[in-house]
Image (spheres, one colour):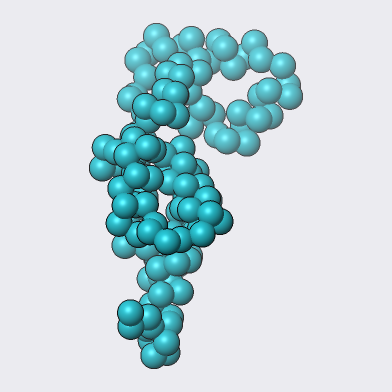
Length: 132
């Protein structure tokens, strides 16, 4: 998606890691040097500067929060209350999948979100918007 067509915002907050101390940088280099070539190749692919061997483990899914602070259960409950009455099981399953993708910060759902915004604008531009 070009910048001109980019979504108005990201679904996910930017996770900017804290800068490493000099001691951590030395330790990181030592870890890298001791890795087998296959593992080094993986790190080179994602980028040595991006690689952080000191990352904290992710919190369990049930206590992670989306950018506005809601948990998966809160997000899904609020959406179903506002939009889910009388909807099919498949519709609800899709909504729950999207909510889980947002909580997990799965980039696939940023793509789904961007496409839905684009498609809505396309339909409106063509006079096909939903008037209900």
